[in-house]
Length: 50
Image (cartoon, rainbow, N blue to C red; front, top):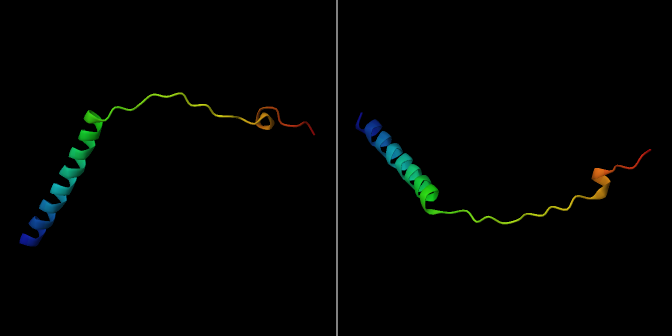
């Protein structure tokens, strides 16, 4: 039984670390806004007529 408790404790610690790092990313990192330009070929907008 102690092996099961040790395993569950390690899993809980890993989940806590992952959760904490995700919360730190949400609270501390600000995304930068920028303009995005995508060129669309005219063949995709006006396909050739058969």
